[in-house]
Length: 249
Image (tube, rainbow, N blue to C red; front, side):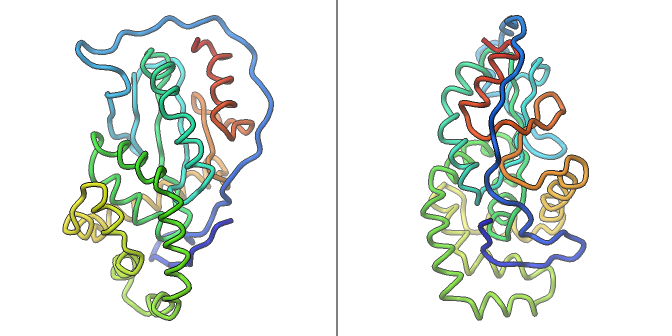
């Protein structure tokens, strides 16, 4: 498990819950090929994004195959899935109207929390482009975080003595979260406002808590298909095979 540091938040779970990575294998029974569903005029389904109660959904909201990912922005396996699935998932599955894809940020650590809050704060149109960019730059983000956690250990420890509502903003400042998002077109003022929204922060934490309690999610990425946790998917090739077997071909 990659642990950057622990940050306690009132009424929240401990933010170093989940391992990064999962076991994979197995297949699925083949079903009949599903018909394609036309997107709204002038649009592609991968450009149709809306907020859900727990995350953001891309594609046909009535798609017969509904995929949910509980993914962490600081999980290398989630980053790998994002990078390897990106074009094919959207072109061959989401844009056919057969598959929808919902991302529910799963919080593993405070850096993860701050980035998820800011990405969600930008709304449906910008959420997936920001998440894609964060995953693409994940190695540099985590290398910097590791260096900062060593060089600023005393400062990070002192954060625990701050009032609850000041801890995440203080952590975000030390880890340069504003710089991470400035490189992606989000201003420092917007980052500060988003991270300072206590209700939004609490909501991100609650989504993770719900995943743990309802679905026993303890590893990222964890995938669901049509409401059922699928334990034998860890990589894009495994997901692709599962979707094809379910009729998305």
